[in-house]
Length: 131
Image 1 (cartoon, helix red, strand yellow):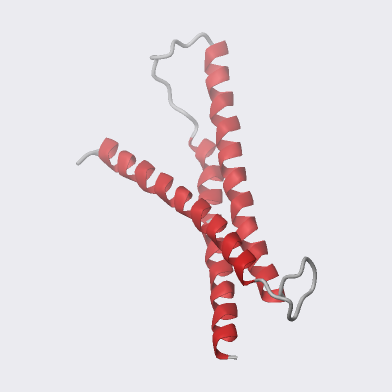
Image 2 (image 1 turned 180 degrees about the vertical axis):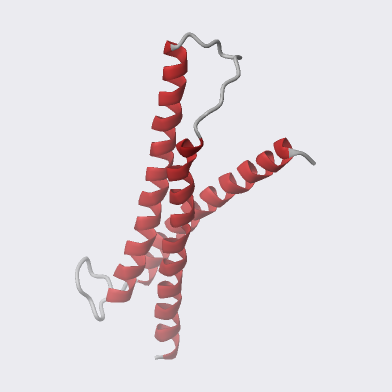
């Protein structure tokens, strides 16, 4: 194994994790819609716990959006800067290490809200089943 193999594994797993966060977020929103009721409603006809769950899940989607938005701008900007410096498409250069920091931070931050949203949803469902 070499660094290239490690990087490829990391990229595969991080891409899969991002896809899972998106799928779980949309599934969570669907579950909230299915389990909405007319008791304990606040706004939008949703019980308070489902609103909090939905908020957490939508926050995860926002963080996902920001992660890919930042990465697109950062790497596109670096590409443009190198293009203006007349580097060929195959010429090697070192990218600044800090270019990935916001992407990595957002990557890890988006997992938490999905987990919180699902815990709240699970508590809501358990309460509904045993109440």
